[in-house]
Image (cartoon, rainbow, N blue to C red; front, side, top):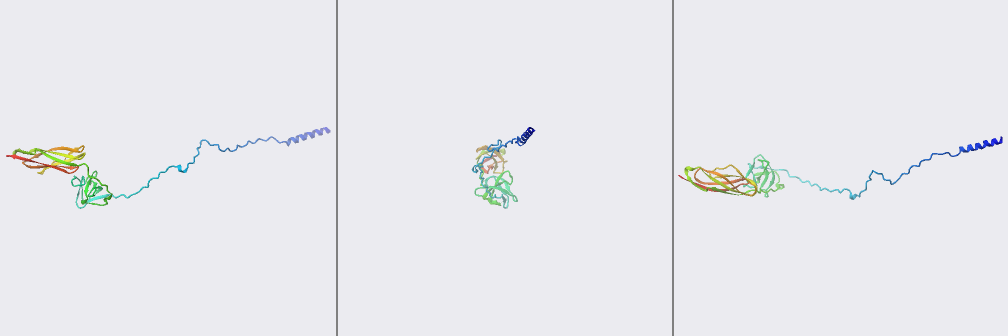
Length: 253
């Protein structure tokens, strides 16, 4: 009986001891420590740039505003004024400024005795007005100086063939040939005509100069009766120039 009690006591001790033994616990997985210094691929980091190497900004010049003179207009004083090809009365008249009209002034000659304007008779061209005969509504100090036309007729020499004739008085009319040597200083279209001492006048004619030089033009003139004659040949464009020659017609009854 005593033996049985010892066995039960021994088993109780064993069972009690097993209850107090530490059990198996799940192992905690250690958390990864944050890693420093690992670059993130695919993202570029801005590089610090010294302030001296930033964009080179160019300093633009400061705009200076000046007052623009208003348009200067010319008007006649009392009567229409001829508008000429150049700043002198030797140049041809190519327009006119009539009373009640105005012309825009775009230039002047060096001594401001003539002004260069939009041709009031043809705004697609320009011409010259004498300051003596016009009013100006503004200050000409700002106007550019414009030189006279460089291309001009510089000489006209006239001859008549024959220079004298002697025919029967009932043989009229007779004809003579007018020849004129026209000299121009450069390429131009020269407009010319002839006029006789008895009042006959030709139509305007033209001769083309491809370069400066001399060209000969000719025309016929009808002599109606005996007498002393003179023939004047003149240019009207690009400028006015004249030349003259004389001839004699004698008749025998």
